[in-house]
Amino acid sequence: MRHRVTSSRHPLSVLTLLFATTLPGFGQQSAPPAPLPSVPLPPALDRVLRDYERAWRARDAAALAALFTEDGFVLSNGSPPVRGRAAIRARYAESGGPLALRALAYETEGRVGYIVGGFGRAPGEPDTGKFVLALRKEGGLWRIAADMDNSNRGRTTAPTPIPMPAPVTPSNSAE
Figure 1 (cartoon, rainbow, N blue to C red):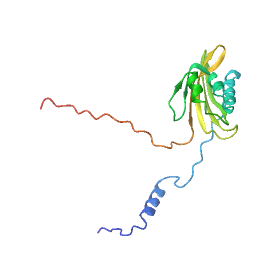
Figure 2: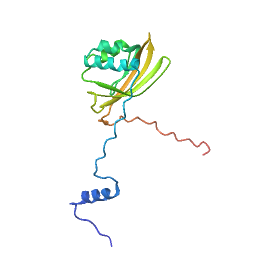
Figure 3: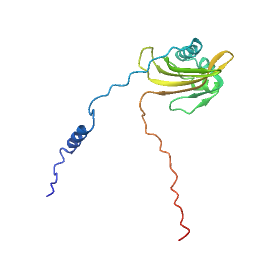
C-alpha cells in the first residue's frame, strides 16, 4: 500500500533534515584558509612593489606607467587587457588609494623574473586580492612586463556560456 503525503507544510524541513544527515559539516562555517606567508624580496625586486604602492596611493598614473616596460600589459580583473605605457597611464587615470603589496614567491633568471603576491588596503590586514608581476630587467632596473591581478571575493556574476558547435553526425553512405 502506498502512502501519500498530503500536507505541504514540512517538505522543506524533511529535505533539510535529509541533507543535514548526509552532508558532513552541514551548518558549520568552515574557517577560511590561513594566509600564505610573505617572503622577503631582494632590494631590486622590493623596489618595484614599494614604488607601485607609492604611485597607487598618490593616484599618480604617470608614475605607475613608468614602472612598466614600454610594451607592458595590465590585465585587471573584469577589464580587457591594455598594452603600452600610454594605455596603462589611461587605465590608471582614475585609480589609486590605500594599497599594501606583499610577496608570496619570486624568481629571476637573467633578465626575466616574476613576483606572485597578495594585496590589501594596509599592511597586516587580510589580502583582498592577488597578483602576478612578470618582470624584465631594462637598463639595470626591473620593470613590469605584465601585471595580472584579481580579487579574492567570489564571482558575483555567472560566467558567460561558451556556445558549443552542433554535434556532427556521420552520414551513412552505405544505406
